[in-house]
Image (cartoon, rainbow, N blue to C red; front, side):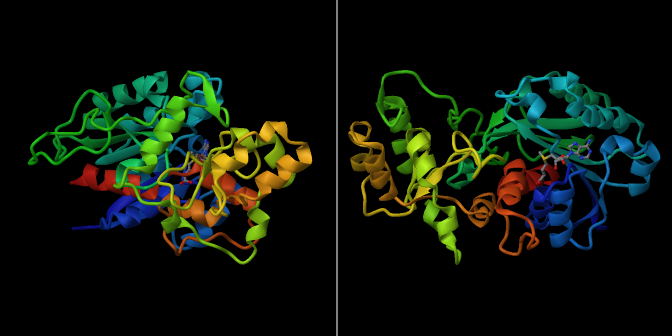
Length: 376
Ligand SMILES: C[S@@+](CC[C@H](N)C(=O)[O-])C[C@H]1O[C@@H](n2cnc3c(N)ncnc32)[C@H](O)[C@@H]1O
């Protein structure tokens, strides 16, 4: 069989390309398209032989697309128009324009691709852009399935709940029982007893639950949830993903940050089986951008935070420093996101830039599983 010709749109640092490689499918990326210069440099550095088009998608004509003669589209359109924290501009947000352009092109291609995979944030499923996508897929005669999946479903100690859609041109069909409902987790093959895992996995809540705050601005429910996560033996421990570098001190949280944000941080230990989603502001903004690691585990977290507010600022800092709280390194985040060891950054890319592009990327293992599911 000929190798599948894959078009990678919004290619960033190539998360989709790594997922395709991991899927071991006989395939090649015939073009990757992205406008971001930093992401493109990193992409080129790791995939020097892949044609990378540093332009906007809407700057490409129908003829340009037709010439690429592709069988599969892998894409992660910008998610800001759909995030719950954002303004949710949806289809009116200028950043959705290129995606609507793709939807407009799809029916007009001289050869429609056999497969389409899309990744976006949770929130996309309630957008008008998603309705437009489903309408286009129906009009173009595709079977499809939507998912909400987080890497913990694969035993990876990192939450990154994302929306995915896989589509296959008819008469092709999937090897699992599809559903109109969004699947939360991976489906089981048709042959196994229960057809799929619809709603079998509790979706990790990323919102704060109510109730009295008992520790570090956390409620009893939140603490209970974290304890439950840490006791799930099907999920690996963070220590398997850690990677100490030469100059680890650069990742330590400075005293000022500790003083200001310690109670708001999500603190994990090497033995933990969880971490929150790492976003593009990690290492720069502390709150809600990703977990921090307690690298000295001889000290108990609870004992440090107990009565902390009764101490002077200097003593608070002294106490907090005992924990040796540090950021995860970009390499460690890449490990948690499933990037292989041969993925590297060009030397001049700063740590801040590395966090930024990783925060925009995706979990390679999750997508690789979905690619396999899509083609089987
Ligand atoms: C969510 S990120 C995708 C990340 C990618 N999957 C990865 O693994 O790094 C979205 C990407 O789309 C790019 N982008 C946004 N609008 C674009 C457009 N109109 N044309 C081409 N690329 C665009 C951004 O530069 C960004 O790299």
